[in-house]
Length: 205
Image (cartoon, rainbow, N blue to C red; front, side):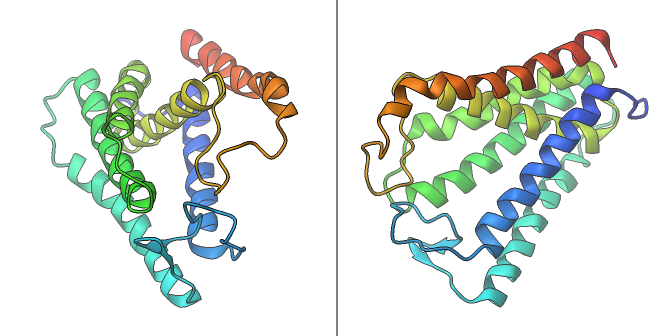
């Protein structure tokens, strides 16, 4: 495997690390009112929010350890695998891990949806195929597939889905319905993200 050199992988690595820091802060550090949410944004035990700061932080370290644990398991894969196979397997593995985490976080409060569970492994596999031509070692494959999975999910299932309303709030009706007509404005940064990455990917930089 050749070393990490391309700007495309730097872009994806930065995206993933940003997401990890943001999610860690939201679930394990930030303290905000939870009564407005149907699905808690802080770490919870079957809907019961964990309020002890030390316990939350320790759970956060466990969450980070789980991410590294999946990476460690992937390191056991045969070195004879092609970059495409390695990246696709990594995408599926982290997709399943994301699906399990999301299935617990959301499904233990509302209900379990098989199509939502299957979404992350599928988008993870697609992310692996996207990353494979630029793969520069397993660590960067992992960072890349996580970024692609999030980029695909957020763009196609949340922004471009007509009439989509997030289910984390208790009210299923939008508080500001006029923004349902203006939401296309927010499509611009998502398109720009993919356009920049696409340009870096095509040029191999």
